[in-house]
Length: 68
Ligand SMILES: [Zn+2]
Image 1 (cartoon, rainbow, N blue to C red):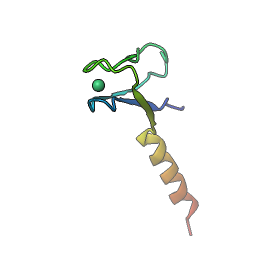
Image 2: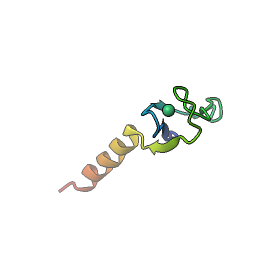
Image 3: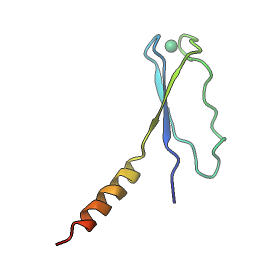
Image 4: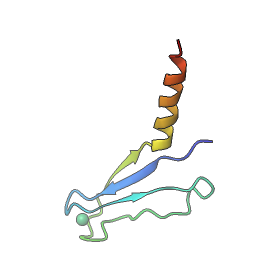
């Protein structure tokens, strides 16, 4: 089961940032703001945040692969 990556929106103008975690069953259920709620800047930066559980799974896989 693959979880969608979380999105982080940030405003370079005033420093506002917020994190959005899309749901797997309702990918389009959460609306992302089109502009900064603090200063109204429409040019928000967006970045995906890799989920922690995914990193842990990869880590565990590496540990298991290195059994003597
Ligand atoms: Zn702003």
